[in-house]
Amino acid sequence: MKRIDQQHGFSLLELLTVVAIIAILAAVLFPIFRAAKERAKKTACVTNMHAIGVALSEYKLDNNRYPTCLLGYYTVDQPIESCTSSLYPEYVKSIGDFTCPSQGAGDINSLQSVTVMDANGGKATADYYFGDSYDWTDPTGMGDKVATYMRMWAPPGTDGVMNPGFVGATFAPNTDPDDATKQTNDYMRQLRFKDPDATTVVTWCMNHRGGDDKAQVLFLSGNVVAVPMKKMTPSSGTITGEINVLYRALPK
Image (cartoon, rainbow, N blue to C red; front, side):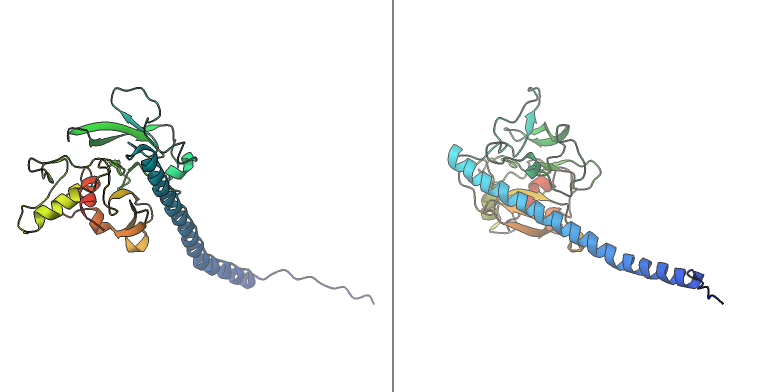
């Protein structure tokens, strides 16, 4: 008699076991993959900042000053055209280098209005490229637009040093005998001056806070340093209008 081999399928228990194993592996591996992807984005962001730092040095050597903007900047009531004083495209060739990979989708050609300081120390409205995360940022993700790269963030006071009345300032009275010296040093850390200190803040990125709650900050020295968010945002004030001023007054 001819023997007939019978083929058996998987039992329900076996299928459930395989599904359970796959679910456990996914739960373990997906966070690892996400973390690796975020690390790659952070590395690319820091690389962009280093490139901008090198380009700033080259621009300064050629023009004896720092540019008005990094990528694109427009002033009120002026034609919408490229910033006449920027790093692109002569010093930074790729427009993508001005956008953090974690910035998210955004039309690089559309504009976002940001409140900045004008030449007289007052408030003025400027427009930046939406995808340009190194000229401006939205730190809360809720529309609190902040200009990160600014040649001037504080006008002179009547005494020639820091003016506590500038936009967003919340400096305490001179209770510290060295306070005037500190304010003078902070005031000189602006890119509008010919030779600001190496600790002058160029720009920063808040898209890589992670569990340590830190921002990546590019200093004029070319170094990119992870700075705790508590130094980026003063506890006595709000983010809007102050983060772009008070952090610059906190030397590294």
